[in-house]
Image (spheres, rainbow, N blue to C red):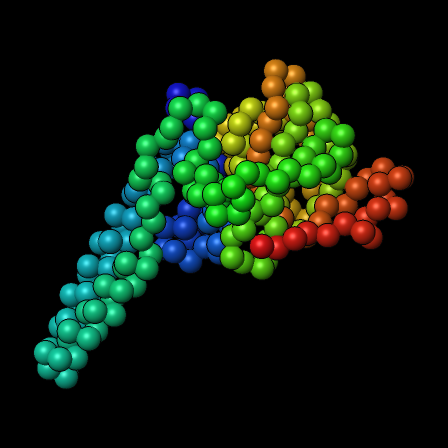
Length: 231
């Protein structure tokens, strides 16, 4: 993909992703972004090389201590433990090449296939539809959101964290324009009103830890009914 994303995860998130310590929902969003972003894939590759180097040094130190203290049997046990940790930290998705423009990342396609034979879109507003995804965790609602061409979402702020990755098309808000692959983090209290581009629908992957808070007078009466559906 020629146009690399303009909005990327923080360096800290990439370090956690490389180490295998990032939570499930956040990892799904980072992995989707990596599908589009050669810069972050390169950063991840360097982080994995650094991690591999430190693991190798650690293995050497463990091997030396084990041979001195408990003999060959304990040495083999400790080395097997370290190798198991290395295997557990492995990540396959970033190494894959990107598919043609407009296609979803492989991990998103797997989640769609594991959830429904066909996406079950439900209406949130006249301009926005949502389809939940099953991810095996209970902290975030992970879903696809579809904004129709030129459609506006209700103005809202956030009660919790929200991670968004643009999978198709683009949208804008008061702060910026977001195109395919862009990774956006919204913090509690962030207020905005996304609007889909005029030239086609926009589909985003999102992970929400809490429901949004609508800003309009009529919307405020609905806030008490808004829920997320962790999955």
